[in-house]
Image (cartoon, rainbow over all chains, first blue to last red; front, side, top):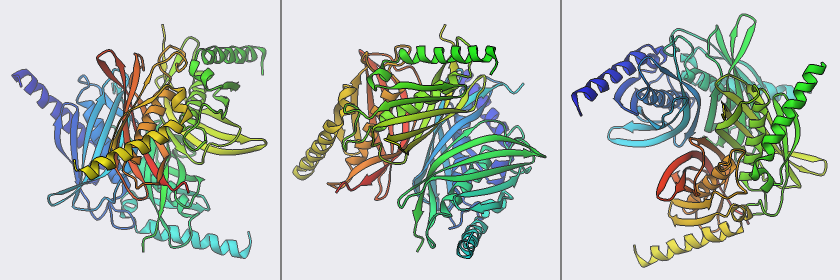
Length: 147
Length: 147
Length: 147
Length: 147
């Protein structure tokens, strides 16, 4: 990596972190940004007692919001400065009960465009060293100029 | 309504309420069951300070979890006693920023089946007497026997 | 209806018909435009011997293309002249085998916007006077300037 | 590969080919099975003059039907003999106009289960040696016993 791209990568990471910190929902979920790379963002949250469905697994809403946010921030890493992104639509397939210590969502960009980005995310339940995919998401992000 | 069906309707409402009360995520969201009819369930939550995205609107995760839960419980009202339902997959289109006093999600059943149910939900932002649709959901529920 | 809006409605219907006639896939499917109203378009195709899956029902691809086209043209009816629309994404839930004489798709607009439209479609299998819903679609259209 | 698994692989390929050959829609599309492996199936069709939308690109319905079929047959390769699969729901994101010589769809299985399978497909436009992804699909297949 050149000095210039390293500085750029760190600016992008800061931009994502700043936005993330303003999402009170992420704080409510106990979520944190684990990794920010161009086109790829990882978010993690413990499966906490206040985020469950009726059988003690994590609520589908938790898998959704982590996957959606990871995918959205992945899209953001490829946008020009000052632009933000919003979710147009998102589809989630739930593959297994979300049980374990934490959920980790990895969002990635399949296509970035001036008008729309196509994104995906995989949500994994982590228990000690074991990892099990619990959800897959596929959706669309739109760049918005907040000014 | 006959006495029998009235009793049945009240049993179904109790069954939904009991399950809803066990969802700690619904409590975290400040959500409450507003109406339970056969094939149609309404859930409402205030747009509270701890459930926002970075621009002060309700997080997409809130619209999702209210819509998904309303749709799931709508499916549950048509299931035999003792059966529960889980989300197989859910698609959400976000149509407008979720700003206002509260979000209200109305879930409905498009097709109920022994193996799968097809459901929809509409999520509306409510501000005083004004109502604005902010999200539409369409998905699949599967009956599960928890025993 | 005023004279002006009647003329406008007939111009919109012509615009949709002209575009439809250029879709060779619609001809291959034997599809025809049944009704064009602002925000609502109906397309119909016989369940013909060359459009089937392995069990003799209409192929899911037929239900998809009729529903997608009906939804797209519904969005087009609300666009300024000279603008066209393309499908960004589409979700289909298949509810019953597509058997009978014909499939009829009714597309409708849930939200029209400068940047994106949210649409839905219902696909019904028709046999004599009986009608059975076989698929529901929900998706996103984007206006494009073909010039 | 052992002799037994080689025989098994060839039986699976035959099972998929037999089913594929009964789909008259695949014949109408000029589609052919390119590769059948456990959990992964490739289908290809020329972008022919009778399968276009109004601007001369392949119709979204073609990308859908190839992707959906590739994904469905990928799921079938992991099913016990005598079982077939049907599409429960499918979501397609269209990423670029489907122009070129042919469309190639690669379907894969993300999770196989007794009750449901989660599948994906990627559809690529091929022109000489160039390949461009034009659509991504994600959906659910259900095993059915045709007897």
